[in-house]
Length: 345
Image (cartoon, rainbow, N blue to C red; front, top):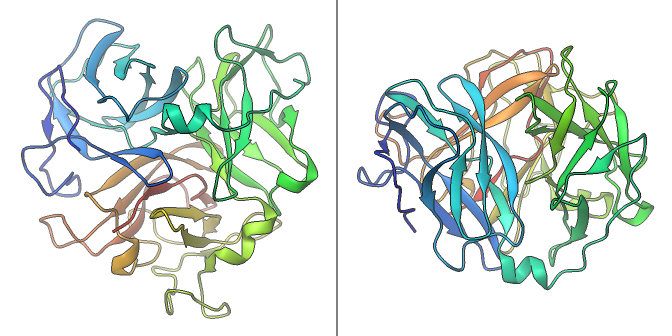
């Protein structure tokens, strides 16, 4: 479903930035049968000098239960985006670059009626973290067994790297560590899910005090590991052989092996850390059933503790690029695919 946009956004058509193949639709919202809402597409627009500008409004039935903050890919950097319970998509910061590109592919949540029917646990916060007013950090397990996080945390002082925010009990822990991109008050942040159950706040050498948003973080616990098809010749493949490309490989060292899973509701989930390949080149190719249903996905990723960009291409673009995930910006020392999700064909 196209998203009605208030500002003068249009599809990005430059090579490498194809959005949905319908040239009249800059952003497209999709809802799975289990209520997972995702946004696809890459758009260009005019400069916006004001703060807290409404960019567009999600239709009824595609809105979140709580206001959430996400990170958006904007003109080679990142900017916050807020999705309100009334469906408004808001840019808290000015978007000052004319004809810049914007992607909202990091926005992902459970539709309000689905989220409200789930059992959300409010964990005990650790290490002097507190909840941001109106954004209590919580976690819940969806109908497919995946664990969702939401809310924002804050501290009166800066946190050290890998400071635990709260702990998730044993039945719902991941088997290996993983890194998820997140929005912080200073712009860049990320959070890690650790095998001991800790959800930790991270930084990249700069002080990330203020808040850290957990919106859009979803992971599969250890009990679902067998549902992932792992990359490389040494592993069995539910989708046939999916070898690495361009010298990419598993990072290892106790972090998640790279894999892909498609749930029965059509949601495709990537996982794991890759290393040693060529930045700007595809990591592996995707079979048709795993393509993004409505076009390209361009999302913020974590690479060696700093901001990176992951592009997931479908076969619907006009430049002939092969479908698959591309490590577009970052470092090949390690690059995280954790948290990358989209609605598959």
